[in-house]
Image 1: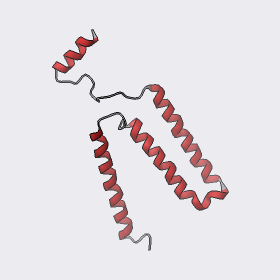
Image 2: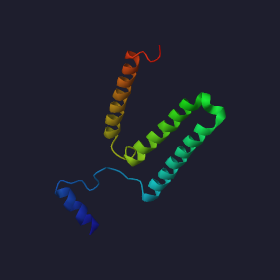
Image 3: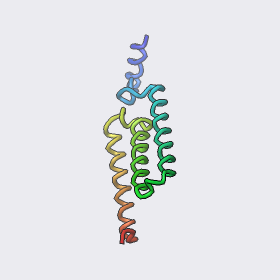
Image 4: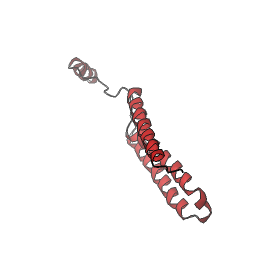
Length: 111
């Protein structure tokens, strides 16, 4: 029965597996959500720790980058979809970061 449905979808021009690979299960989504919540809790704790005020911004940037990577890879499915989507995303991200750096340099933020 399932093979017939797949053949019908392919005959109609719809691929049987539109994303080409496996996707996370609900259990994996929950695991990633718990990890994101733990990172967020760590961000709050680090903010209130007295001894790390000198390194607060780099630590928060690190936590932010970790959360960004997890959301992009799992919730946006870039880990499981075609690599073409990932390339477009990375290209857009690189362009946005380049524009941001150019604006910061234009306003002489580091002078």
